[in-house]
Length: 224
Image 1: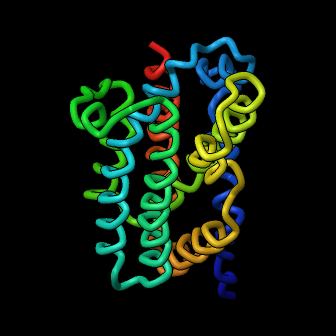
Image 2: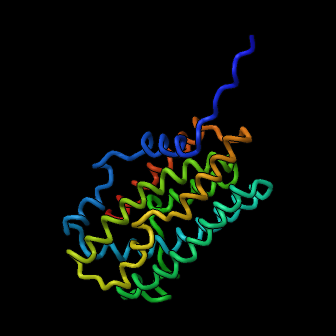
Image 3: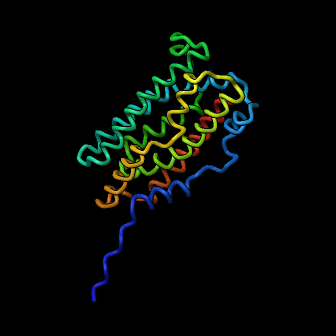
């Protein structure tokens, strides 16, 4: 008697498992913890804006490349296209933070980035070149859960402890609440990867652990 075919996991279950398994330790991000209590100096926001100005451009290129690689798989291409579009929105919001920190175009152009801050986009570019798009989608989605939580904490603290105007907090507000559209496209992309046999959760978790480590490294390097 033939055995019934193994039931494939749902995209929601795969993503939820990655978010749980890859969540950074609560005390890993020293800077966000210090911002939350108002202990971090205001200057960290200047460094943050300078570093993110370069990271956003790099991540947008990585997401665009992943979208091109997934061109034959519309659900995945749509997910990465939306991520790339989101980087454009983030850059617009970052401008208000840069203004509040009194940064000029010359400051942005002349800035020498910190290696620990740029490890994340460098690894994202590696994934864009060599990872299966479905696995990258799982890893990136798990990372976004941590990033969103950090941004929510910082957004609140900027008002409570640092007296930043609303416009300057817009970058963090953009990411503080998970996007329903992005979540839906992530599930569609991962489900497509599962259904076509392209998704490999073990590989995705390996990528995700490094992404999360580089995420924490970014924040802590801003604080150095």
